[in-house]
Length: 281
Length: 314
Image (cartoon, rainbow over all chains, first blue to last red; front, side, top):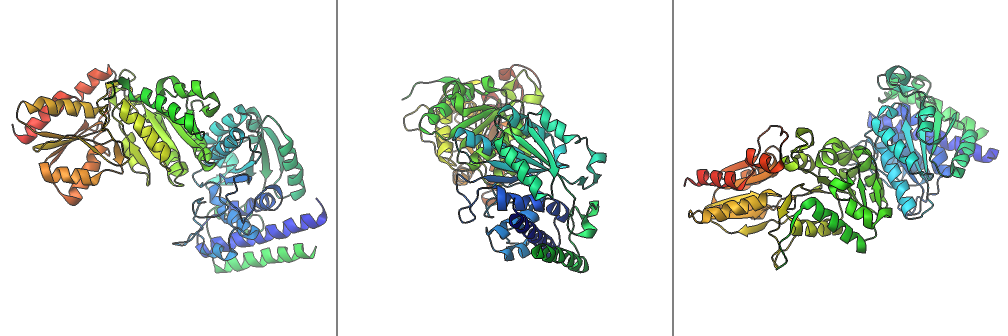
């Protein structure tokens, strides 16, 4: 990855964070913490990794993305808006009555959303179905799905993982946003999710663990994942929940609430300063 | 007139989906380790490359079906009704119903006639559960010919459907040449003026036997076969309420949330008349031969006839 490309991704990721926090602020509710931890991977997927065309969002040959941790959609919506699937103005009506952008992803109304999700554990099964359809139809699109580490306490995640491993779905790439926190506290204290890399290995995945905010590491990991044949891939992303807004970082309380006016101003000051810094690089 | 066939509707389903797949390459069938029982094994034998056994994981099966449907496949996801609609209810609601995907949920071994396996496997709630999902078409075909027609119809219809299959063999009665299946349309099998029996699935034949037996007693019984419980043929039911003034519903299902309540809500809102619901009265089943259990729980021609006599006062 050359320095211009890296800079462009970093700049876009700042804009995605600004869009996500603005959406949640305007909605007066929503999930900023997990949107910010995943903002970099959303950016990488839509601006580097996936073969998609915002002008043709239903192209049968496109790569697919299923946001299994559906509550992080403010981040995904911001990435889709940046990529040109719909006007950025839409972000301000997130969760409003009559708005296109629902509290959790709705494939019927939002261009670029490949599967309706929100009930944890279900997105990864749908991603397996999409990957299976690709195999049946001998198409070479790839399917990406993002899980949360807390979400991985759902049994269905492992039903789906067993299926993906057994059926050698090498067109499937499962990512886990390991931000370490869930609503009731640290993931390590609540469930038995860790060691998650060993679990995915046991279910037949090729597993890589990277820093989920490092675009160069993503480039290497996704390239490796694409080259893996005969088994599905898993990329564990170590991330910081609330990344980019100082008072949200690593704070359980910012899983699912909106900033007030003052907090929003502070978040914008921080994120815009970071954006200016990245643009000046 | 086609020949009378004695077959369980699960077998008719297996044959019909296999037949439909010969001309429709998008049909795929999923099962959760019950292919021999649900009869999806018939399809598996003919189209092994389009059959996916997901193992004992019904929630995942429904999610995979949803994903396949987003790519233009027509997945039939089959298990026992208890599991495909009960265990996986929320997956059906959120991954199939909410995005209105073209998935056909199949529930076999529905009702008390499962028999010896007992209460854990006797699903008496599937129709209630599936009815509550917006946009879900709910079907309970009564015999071989109706199941064959229903599978063809749901294949052509684009959207989520639930199809209920029975375990016990049933003698066909829809083998007449003018039989016509239309989604959402009930069928008047006997005309009558004293009372209407609205029945579904395995109970339609029992209702016919009751009506025929009462003819000699001078009781004129209308029999309506409701193969599509949702959307319900409101017009036909309201007409029957107006013309016969009394209704009995019969279903091999809980009286809570099934055909009986669907008919009651329709009648209440438009033409209130007395309705008696025959079904399983808010209790679990238990082990025993299916045919004996049907009698024990009042799901028989004899009990339907007895109830009719009481209601019409003869």
